[in-house]
Image: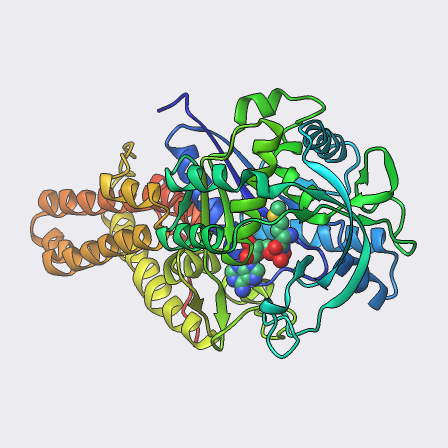
Length: 479
Ligand code: MSP
């Protein structure tokens, strides 16, 4: 398995506001999957970034009285800060305003679509939702408003270049049906297939007139027509290959494309399971292998979103509980395939039950015993990932993988209580010690298994075992 490559991408985030816990979910889920593959010996490449050529970013900057490009730098620095805190082990952060890294590839890809005869000009009128950065139809609206953003779309009439997506509908459908482009979970595969079958795929508006109020450097110019910039989703989707050097220096591209997994949330399924494969087919490029579609984090039963005003700031949770507790919650208590609700009360409850009392208490019990009774540290042995853990992670069932580990935490805790090595040691030193060594070995396994999920905790436990000392400050109880 060691020479396998594994390329995973997150969506690129809109920098119109700070990231909330929903965004942190996408990134943490991605990070866990990549760390697992890295541990298995795969050669991994992990891409994330920001989707900057957008109207909503300009609106947000204007609202704060800032120049858009200056506003962007502040927000993007903030994203990077959050990702550092959350221990997101990405290899590259691509920004779509990066004229050196992103624009040449986006331009080259556009040119391929032109060469295939798939770009044409048309006058267009329609309803544009800035929240989605997409045209909606009357059918999508509820009481004249976009149901996801609660805002009325703008009516636009303009000259656009169109992408002939309709030409690829059958081919896309086939690739998804046969799992050549695998959409996970099944329910999302059905969703996109029935959408293609029932509604077909219409051609997409792929450029916008360059706006006078947009600063220079925002929006990738359409080759050969300075009056137009690429539609933001066209240049955004291209990031998955431009970041690898497509169209400029394609060493990474050759090594890592096609992507093994694109991780996305359910709201951007159509862009990734219809438009993106359409663009790749038109350009004659290989399709990604898997699209992993997760649900939403809801708060009070509604999608967490800035527009709805119900966001939980991950920084706040991190400063109160630490980043590993946030990773723990997202990995274990949110299903990757369905929506999951979070409340601060529930967060505290599971923190106390499973981190402070569960894992934290177990580590403290085992290593206090070892520290007091063993003359030297127990040697660390290499540990295999058990098949069950590997199977769940290969199927992206990160929460089930966590349940498996916590089940073993429970077993070890029970074993310790039932076998009472702390009593045994008083009458039979040798036997008592060998019992403690066994417990430490079991703890070592758990620490290794935790590495993709809670990398810092895993390291602290291993260091504690190597120093034969209980680690300090592992998940203090919160009242
Ligand atoms: N910029 C586009 C993606 C372009 S990819 C070529 C975008 N950006 S976003 O910032 O709005 O969302 C980024 C990701 O966060 C999406 O996958 C979206 O589904 C996810 N989430 C946003 N809110 C979310 C929740 N409340 N819960 C879980 N994920 C959610 O879309």
